Length: 227
Length: 214
Image (cartoon, rainbow over all chains, first blue to last red; front, side, top):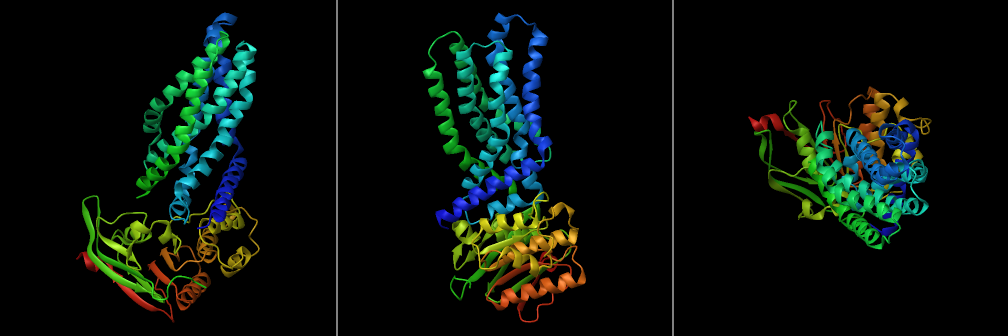
């Protein structure tokens, strides 16, 4: 197969998933709503002391983003598995890992990007200083694709099981922990006015690692799940 | 039209399939050439679908090998898939896309041929429905759309699991015509069907999996 037709398949699959998401708007808004609700409930629950909010803010936003991503993960492959289109991807004449990458990119555009856009607002709500909000944006921009990429491996492994949801969380959450630690501490460090280059380098390294390995692992996991 | 060698063969050697500790079939072999159809028969649960999924390469046989032009299909991967098209018992179409969008995706996943998407829809009698959401089509029409996927890529081997499910008498006839045309043009078929398959111009091999197991 020529690289030209592979590019076309990639673009068409990306467009297909975005069209499907627009036709299911309600499902698309769910993770975003969850993210906003959880974050805005915290000041009500623990009190509106600015110092306290500033201290827990980065952690709260990141935990909420992580759980919102977890909520939406199943959607990457579930419906394609149920209507048989996933089989067709495995039987296509293109490398499955490239098709997987298109689906993960679509998932990030649908669920990750909206979180990114709304997060500065939530940062202001929790009283984070300006510098910290910028770093929060950077960590989310680097980190949410990692959530989708790692999540895809977990979903691919569990999509064949009837009640895969529980196993999926257990499988994926431990892999999310390093990212959570580095990202939340980067925002904390920035709020304290210290340099965060080391944190950001580590998160970038995680992104590169996930970007290069996860599509291959996901493709292999899909083969196992469907056989 | 189809660009691989003229004496392409699909061969199965000593296939075995075990499911939940039950051996569905063992020591199954056949040889399929261009212009021929393989029709699998047998009662429910005799392993027809499993055999088709093994032929596709989705499932691995518990023993034995399948070769395409004398190369193991598990080694060929995408180089084998480019010659095959599969319509399983799930249609493999998205209900929230229109028939045109579905076919465009199916075409992009394989090697496109000269048939336009509209022509393919016309051949399965869905012309006029191209912009309706597939969800709003009847079960038979959805099945026709699934079969239309076969027409938009350039493939040799069609693997069909109960292709006539939900189709009306006319639909069955027109699909049989398409299958017959495919083998006449040098294609191959592997089909399971509870309905008698009438292919006038095709050499047919039948394998009854229930008899094999007995």
